[in-house]
Amino acid sequence: MRLCFSMYSIEMSKILCNFAHIQHFQMANNKGLGKAKVGKKDEFYTQLSDIENELRHYKPHFKGKVVLCNCDDPRISNFTQYFILNFKALGLKKLIATCYKNQNVELFSENAAEKAVYIEYCGTDEPSGIPTKEEILKQVKELKGDGDFRSRECIELLKEADIVVTNPPFSLFREYIAQLITYDKKFVIIGHQNAIKYKEVFPLIRDNKLWLGYGFKGGAAHFISEYEDTAVAGNHKKGMRRVSGGVGLTNLEIGERHEDIILVRKYIPEEYPTFENYPAINVDKTSDIPEDYDGLMGVPITFLDKYSPEQFEIIGNCCDTDWLREAGFKPIGAENIKKLRSQGNMAHVTANMPTPYIITNGKIELPYARIIIKKK
Image 1 (tube, rainbow, N blue to C red):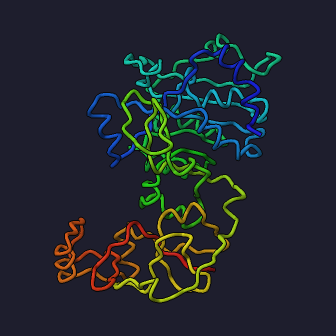
Image 2 (image 1 turned 45 degrees about the horizontal axis):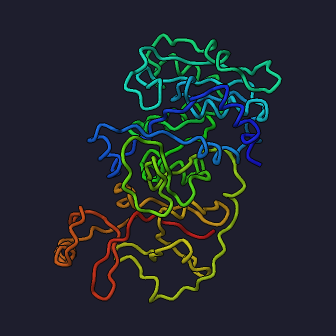
Image 3 (image 1 turned 30 degrees about the vertical axis):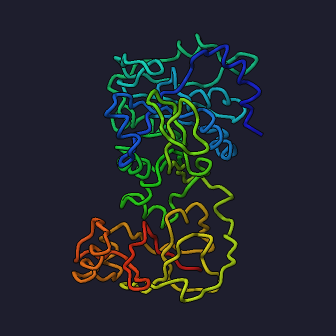
């Protein structure tokens, strides 16, 4: 069931008109987004359908709870729209939504809001369970400050919330996650898989304080954007910007994360080379994890999509240089760097870096973004 959205979608569109969310999805090191910024068309907006597809898995968690969307203009946010639309069906106690004062008021508008605003919505007396546009607007109030999620005013609202749901600014992702952990909040947020590798985030995953949600189909998110999309992928959508690596991150329990990966491959030494500077084998794909190997394994970060804490133990993050040194990874060395360069590989590594590497048929290879795991 689609959480009663289809039941109300036509009615809601008539009532709220362009009640569309302007949620920035800022990502570092993404060519498409960087190019868009240069082109002055750098607005990326989360689709309501993507919000719905993620949140429909968490319905039992919301009953009787106060939900906070603290990066969302309550007049236009798709996150706000989702919870207002499903307020009764989810059994919410209250919805709070706040926005930073510079968030645009209209889709693709260049006119920034002069005041930060918020709403505390506790339901409607409308028989349909859906408030009128006028009813919503009457409940929108101005914040005293600028609406920054780190402000004292917004922190007080955060303290009241049981669950936080939003798409936070990617450039502030570390601070955003740290705040949620500091105040011991449950959450479902949209992020990018690069954030998983952060020193501030990965230990939370390792220690089962944070895990991946359901995310986007095929790992590719589509965001509404004025910027022309040149993507050629089969799931390219007109008027949308395709961004690979979009993920849902949560600390709400979901059944899927306790399902074991079915392992079918057998360990054959020739097919699973050991790192030259650490006693772990390299596994290129999650589906290639051997079922009969009990030692350390370096697997792609996409392993976390299927990770079950009952089946595997996460040991460390190979993107964390400090951890690599602590774990005993030896530096790659000057001779190997010389060989690497002679192969035409200009990766940003130096001789004293404890970079994981393997040697196959005399050729040095640097596996991309590995995490070290072990079967339980």
